[in-house]
Amino acid sequence: MNSSNFVKKVIHRTSSYWKYSIFTLIFSIFCNISWGQGYWQQRVEYEMDIDFDVKTHQFSGNQTLKYYNNSPDTLYDVFYHLYFNAFQPNSMMDVRNRSLPDPSPKISDKILNLDSSEIGYHKISSLSQDGKPLDYLVEGTVLEVKLAYPIPPKTSAVFKMEFQSQVPLQIRRSGRNSAEGIDYSMSQWYPKMAEYDTRGWHTTPYVNREFYAPWGDFNVSITIDKNYILGGTGIIKNPEAVGYGYAPENPSYESVEKLTWKFEANNVHDFVWAADRDYVHEIRKAENGFDVHFLYQKQEDAEMWSKAIDYTMKAFPYIQENFGEYPYPQFSVIQGGDGGMEYPMATLITSGRSLSSLVSVIIHELMHQWYYGILANNESYSAWMDEGFTEYAEMYTKAFIYDSKGRDHEFFNPVASAYVSYIMWAKTGMEEPMSTHADHFVTNNAYVVAAYTKGKVTLQQLKYIIGKENVDEGLLKYYDEWKFKHPWPEDFFSVIEKQSGITLDWYHDYWINSTHAIDYEIHEVTPSSKVSSKVVLKRLQRMPMPIDLWVTTKNGDRQLYYIPLGIMRGEKPNDFAVERTILPDWAWTHPEYTLEIDIPFNKIKKIEIDASGWMADIDRKNNVFPRED
Ligand SMILES: [Zn+2]
Image 1: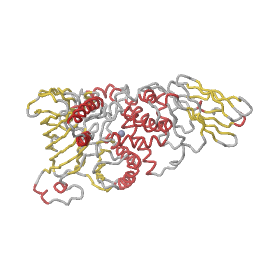
Image 2 (image 1 turned 120 degrees about the vertical axis):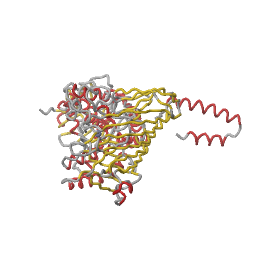
Image 3 (image 1 turned 45 degrees about the vertical axis):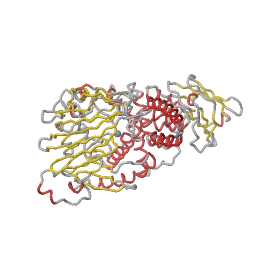
Image 4 (image 1 turned 90 degrees about the vertical axis):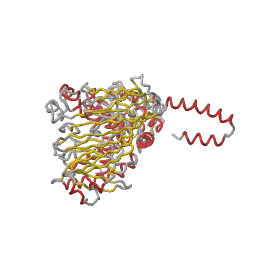
């Protein structure tokens, strides 16, 4: 990180040759150790010239890609994603979606029925590395490339590619002529370098969902019929030439058929754009100066859009305070696609919705700027880190912008309904671990529950385990440490462990990597003396948890007993305005725990395990004494 400054400083201080030699020896050993174990990431610089034909829905592309190998490994091959090839009969996406027990209605057999003018494709006409033509093989949505020259560590290579593409009829995310009449939703639309990281190549074929790619810069020129308005990732470098945003009408439009839009986006891992002839374009300024663009079709729901825009602008300061600064020069909300989908600095969303649904989808996709865009986890392997965290932040943000009742309540839980959905699904026996690869779940619903539902419960439940402030502070530290990188689950948990001082490997292993459920019961309450009572608690399912035990007396007093889980090696702070008694640890091996409370049996009104409801206990009836039936 700062190693070059470090070297200069030390050289200055140790002028003698011998001291210097010893230093360099030690320094090189240190570097070898830290490079061997430390974090690194690849880097890409894309230059693309696109010539688009709106009559045939085809375009030709010239791509120059400078690829930096920052890994400690020599590379002998590279891989590109060719996402448009998924939209062809008998592609993996087509067959998978006709084979799933619960296929997405957005896809079902629609790909199978595309004709040759409606399919999507990328055809590579030339590919070279540093001037030398390359051998390559197209395998569906993946391009396999044998390198002409190996790429050693800490060096770069320049790939030049010419390609012809056809935009498919819009079925899933990208494509032309969406159901709402948006002409072009251009996501996953160019040959895109796959990611190589500490776990090797990630050449996931495009089967259903989720993306992962190297960080870098994009310079993209799109030449297209002059009647189209474009929006996308990055800033437009020539707004006057294309009449974008505040720019005045350009009289020279009259004499040309096509205009060239020049986009620049730095420090991102994808590039999206959309084009339509009927976009209304509204621009707002966010508090710290960046532009927020809204591009949507002229229609009667303009009033609804204007309300949604107000809510969006209200959300920005709250989001930045609670989840980290928005680091880019602009954000664009663009009507397009088939629901809502996140891209760096932009989202494509559909419009035919109620106001609350429109606000929800905008806030959801906006939160993805943090959980996907800036904190770019591998979505395929840990979709809960992008979808779950996004939903969690979305729910808190909506509670803020709507000023929801109950925000100040000690047990406030804006994701309560997710607990209900998760528990219902857990009881079906069809749940799959959250660590399952996104394309490999047995059912679509198991993916949805793991990524979204259980994903957002993960953070709310973490408040139960380590306390509210540790989660709030931990999310900001996670942002600071991992922005513009690729965090894995253990990286997130490492930040949270340091923040809280509590060991969480068990939480990761049970909650993320398994489907073991939580069920604790108050087994028995008996008088043990005139002034005290004995409480026996039991763990009925496999997953262990710390226990908040709430006791209410008949005169209305509340007492909180806290039983730490031994393997946590610590206790959470007390979040509640009630005196708390910390009891001895409960070892996870022990299914039963007995405690004495200094309250006579006949004075007890109610005892409850976890009155907050933040612990995802799959049977809450047995959490209460006396049982309420
Ligand atoms: Zn999402």
